[in-house]
Length: 442
Ligand code: SF4
Ligand code: SF4
Image (cartoon, rainbow, N blue to C red; front, side, top):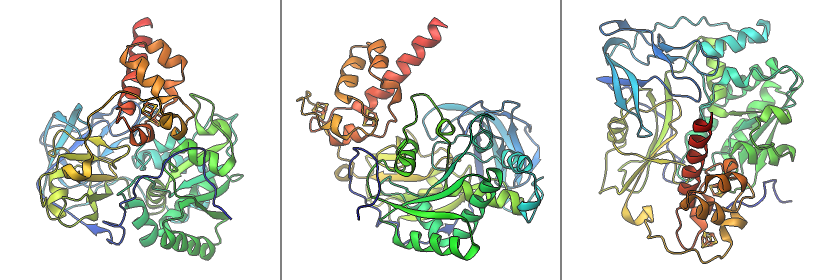
């Protein structure tokens, strides 16, 4: 029987074997740690410390009153060296708190370990999630306490656990499922405590048999009322909309959130953080990153404090074996090309990918030959060649009318295009053009 999946999509080369068998390694560097005040979707935080202050691990260093946001916590103990603007991993310039570590990693969180979550009111669990600074760890970085607070008229019927990790090269979620399934299923149980009528479905791509087995064993040993659902290997299976379609056969209306169709989608690592925050009082101060690519000496999965520099992460993986022509934050499909490696890892950093000229497949664009391959691969059912054309003519109203704002920037169209058109980039530009026009008219 064929496994469930979504409509259209592509099959890029997986390249997972570079790090799939590399157990998670802990890395605790010394020196300077940089914390951008915006590591999430929503309002940026403002620093709540000043230059010269001593800070501890888990201590809040940035916060805001805004609901759609999440606090920033120090990942080391040490002294606030500066509060200034710095380049971030996405290439933007943002306000950052810079801490010089004392190398002691002295704990200073105000979160209290609660032990058995079943005695806690659901609203208290949500408050703890907010105070722990938890955001979607799959890369979307949507604040998790907001996800756990849908409008009262939206009934959550499915909690879908995202263990798909369809992005080539990356293995941080795969390794976490294989090595530490307990907090993942524990985090799911906390979400099911918040939404007791919801069904738990754990989605994992079929190319991760060990993860499916470990997660399945944990579910049955704990008596968790959830089911593991292997998915067919196809990109972008891990995108929220594709996942919801595969599990429930529902499509989310344009511009709506998953709660509109009764769904809550949680990445495995987000659940891991929820469990540790609620039961152990541990906030988000570190993350697992796959440091990989054909010019990395020892590709591996590294667990490091947030704020660690990308350069230090690459050094921890043995450095470069050749000249990288491209270094990406994330995977090759949805990753962002980095302008510098002297930038910090943040809550949404899942991978650092360094590629040689041979592996990066840099090509020159040619004219569209109207082959239609981009149309038949687009998981959102768009006409990428049309979107590309109207954006290059700066016809943003046409871009919007053709559904361009629904583009999820998955990169399928650019990958499949024989003319090597930069279609995904056009879609990004088109969305920015529409937003600018909306702002102007407002
Ligand atoms: S148009 Fe957008 S959603 Fe469609 S394939 Fe291209 S990047 Fe993906
Ligand atoms: S895949 Fe490329 S060449 Fe083919 S129709 Fe789309 S944009 Fe044109």
